[in-house]
Length: 227
Image 1 (cartoon, helix red, strand yellow):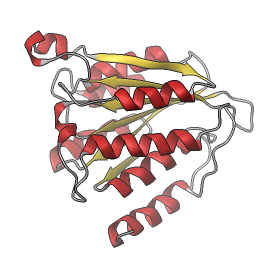
Image 2 (tube, one colour):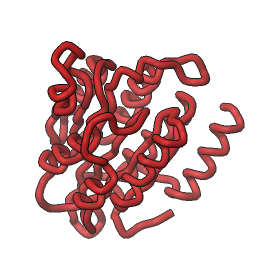
Image 3 (cartoon, rainbow, N blue to C red):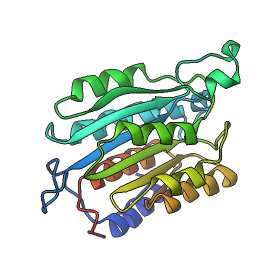
């Protein structure tokens, strides 16, 4: 592991604490739910500094993160930018967000299949996807949206105010920025800040692997704990 990955790992361990994935309920009995919201925009075809494409790194990291979660945990997956080609027009592309695996327990096979099919194609409708993601979640319990994106919003509205509107004491939005520039990082960090969550940069496939695993596990800790 390179120095940057080691440094990031150390920072995240201090920030998040050493986490062991737990059951679908916190110690106080509150139900815990995780919904992964994944970027499948065309820019995911680009390469990271270690030579792997963003999409291939994301697939590999997602598989490992899924493997670490017990079958008893409540998880789902939404993907945006994966279904509507350019010829359909931007209006259709800006509503391109699908719940590919509904939130449930015992759905790891479905999650792995969805990851294999996850491929880059269109626009980046983050605000629309976040609004749809909240509808996917149960009405009660501690709920986490884990947004993984490699760029800024390409549709409307601005996702930062949307995150602030949607988040609450029992709903947070964690964000991983995959090899993003300064402008995209500022927007993604704003989503996490306004969404009561955490933002993590991932510059390499190892960074992404670590961030996905730790933030996915974090979703099943009590919201009152901090590292």
